[in-house]
Amino acid sequence: MKNYLIGIDAGNTSSKVVLFDENGNIIASDATPSMHFERRGEGFEEFDIDELWKDIVVCIRNVVESSEVAPEQIKGVGVTSFGNGVVFVGKNGETIAPGCFSQDFRANEILKLYEKEGKLDRINEIVKGTIFAGEPAPILRWYKEHDRETYDKIGGILMFKDYIIYKLTGELATDLNCFGGSLMIDMETMDYSDELMQLYGIEELIPALPRLAEPTEIVGTVTEKVAEETGLKAGTPVVAGMMDILASLVGAGATGDNIYTAVAGSWCINETHSDHIIPNASSNMPYLHKGEYLNCSYTGASGTNYEWFTKVLGDKAQKEADERGISIYDVLDEYIAKVRPEDAVVIFSPFTAQPSIHMNAKANFMNIDSSTTYPELCYAVAEGCAYIHKHHIDFLKDSGLPLETIRLTGGTARSKVWNQIFANVLEAPIVGVDCEETGALGAAIAAGIGAGVYDSYEDAFKKAVKTLEPVIPDESTFDTYRDRYDEWKKLNDILTTYWDLKN
Image 1 (cartoon, rainbow, N blue to C red):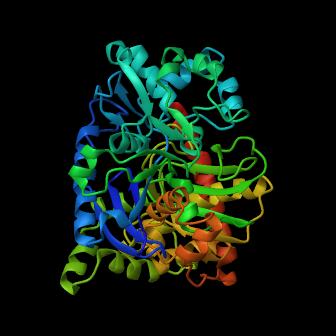
Image 2: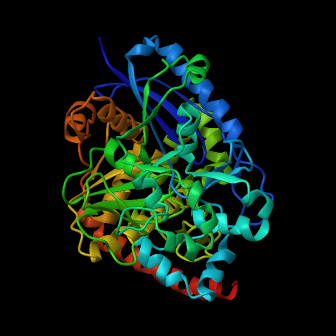
């Protein structure tokens, strides 16, 4: 009898439920619609957690039914999601507030408060990262300061994925990677810290912290009620899972030495692993193995910039795509390929979302004149996204973490044109993965290890991860891109003066 696994990848724009066989082949998948609420204030980025669960139930049922796989053949469920943001429930598990996405920056004022209180440096020292407004603790402190009635009702603090696990199993649990990467644990002890919660000013919530588990640990099983709703078998194991950036690394099989993973998706994620903490990194998360860290440098926008561009400035490409009966992204790739880097003039600052290189950074185009063409704008967006990844990857390299190849994942990783630009800008081979849902695959692999389908991560990689031929950088472009990148950096330095004035 064949074995199957479900990976759920809960993202900022939608959540995907994917059924894999044990060889990593996608058997069936479905996705939820967007869950964003209208903003109810400056910096708010929220979603309806009840609606999320209803949509997840529908997706699971659709996947099980369309696959025609017997429920007993589905050996485990793994869930991944973005880190940061926060979901919390009441003392009886009830809904008491919307969930918060990681781009929520209502708590910028709380960071200033921590700095004023003289706590910020000690917080960053304990968590071995750089706290920003979209992380759970500042948002929870915001509730304490501005909505005490809701704050006092909190009975469980969860990440986005943990809420899905809670609804599947009835268990309040999380994993070390996601909670650690969201700066909620002491990275020295790999456990909760009363001192940290006191520094955050939310010590009343210590009893609301969920159980910590390893990513492959079974934290519960599918309940009878959920089995009836979804078509899953009651008792199916559900593992703790991991943050999507580690799930993407696992789904890409990128655990070898000198391999970086770049996730060009909603966030600009750049990561590798080592046996030590990197000072001033965005985060140093718990990794797959004890004594190792997932060293990360990131900001809040990569593919998001392209999503914005296609939505706001994509009419021309969409019209041509409709006329030719092809994807808008195929048309955009053609436009981008028309521009030679040595002829490029327009520079795009890829800062459509926070956190970014500055608290007040915003996206912009520079050097536009009456002769600027639409393909030049398309090209500038792709190049700008490559530059923000280079900004972070150079930080990791300069910290002493060697780089030989990059596994690129995320929506834009499907484009050969983008792959080549990334390879040329980053001056490293880009290795893709023959799977369009690497995050979900990483979650499914964790479930497979927990359920005994795989003996280890290495066993899973051999069976389920298939890499593509590397995209080799074109050395003849290096000087041009180095000059363009230097110009991009100088522009950001100049803009910093303007952004500082907006504080």
